[in-house]
Image 1 (spheres, one colour):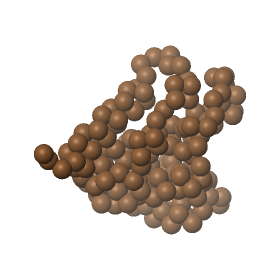
Image 2 (cartoon, rainbow, N blue to C red):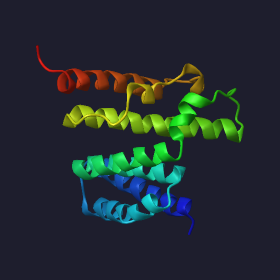
Image 3 (cartoon, rainbow, N blue to C red):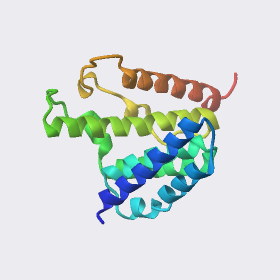
Amino acid sequence: MTPAGIANLSIVYTVICIGINEVSGRLNGTSTGYLTASYSLYGNFVSLPCVTSVQALVLLAVALRAQDKVGQAWQVRGQAIRIAHSIGLHKQVHGQSVSWTSSPLAISIVFQSRLWLSCCTLERLMQLESGRPSQLSDKDAETPPTDLPPATGPDYFTAWLALSRIMGEIADRFYSRRPT
């Protein structure tokens, strides 16, 4: 199986885990089994990194947080950011501007930009929750207006990015500065 295929399998397990918890309204053993299956593929993401591995790790971090495994979620999210950075996803956000068509290149750039920015927003959320310093700078989470396609409906992604900037500022104010 290819690295992307293994990551896709993990993504399916993780989405099923999250879905089971959402439908039942609570944690249950079936969802934990799917989470365990997804987490057992973790070594493949680290040893054979690709864009799909980053996506699987981001979803896995969300699922772990939903099951109150915050320490593991923090570690998985950190690995997702390191892999995303090493394969150059951060350059997609700042490097290219495309005309928004349905071409495969444009779709790929949008996906990779949003994946990197999702890593950044999770970083800000966990920074605010834990008080640990962020491993990303403010420049890493900047979004040039040309890098997001025009919204046809409510643009939740842009709102989520704006909220993450606010969370980062709050965390900086609470945890990074000494009280006067």
